[in-house]
Amino acid sequence: MLTGCAARLNQFNTFAQAGITYVTASQSVIQAAGTASVNTDSALLIKYRPELSEAQRRERVTQSDTLLKQRLNVLQLISAHGRLLQAYFQVLASLSDPKAPDSVGTAAQGVYNSLAKLSPSLKNVTIGGTTVSSFIPTVTAPIVAVFKAHALNEELKARSGAIANEIALQEGAFNAIEAELKTDAQEQQNLSETDSIAQFASTNPLPAEWASQRLTLLTTSPSVGAADAASKAAAHLRSTFTAIVENRLDSADFASLMSDISNMLTLTQSIEGALK
Image (tube, rainbow, N blue to C red; front, top):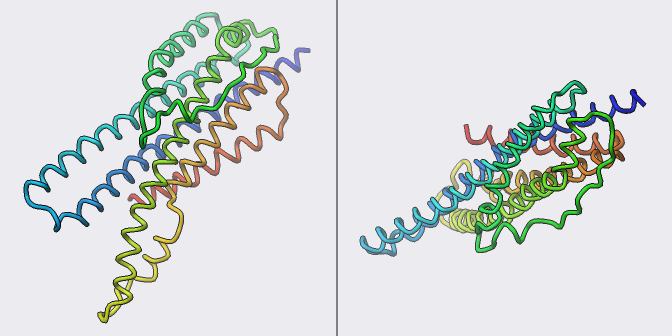
């Protein structure tokens, strides 16, 4: 029985580390989403600038700046929620120590209180005309399988259902980001494709980079792929958390979760490399 308890505690610790890694990678996805939004808007402003008067240009860029600031504030809200969830995972790792004092449970409650205060604002924000709440999946609260690690057991009884909902909120937020990134990527692709066709049809010599740029514009944006990977990783993180709480997780589940997070990391690293 003691061996089984130790194994389950180790599962919670491994899960917590996976959650910390997930949030770290997700911050790069959020940064990429902000960059894509600004770049797309800038490209559109540049394209239509010659058609506008000076007064219209001033009005157009002022409106765009206002809307972009709102978008970036939403992304920062998602980022802040993720960092609080990361702090909770760090406390969960501490609770996986069989000698963890009850004071660690108090710390967990404090982090969750901050999450609960922030979450309603995030659920109600709009990305691309749709609220984040519309992207959140339905969550069934885990049924806690009791074991003898008192501090962790008490924490799970008190908040496992609520934490599952917070992970689902991350999943919904990245689904919303993915949908908007697809729109931004399509806008940029349309502009680039128009330029590429015009260059090829012209009697002027083709730019040396024409072929490589054409490959880039016809390829799915890495930012879209990273957002998709983030939402899938969040969904898997939630299902794994539920399985651990209910004491029905096997090694294959963990391996699959780590594969999802590894894929997310690979994509975010490629984005970071492209931005340098």
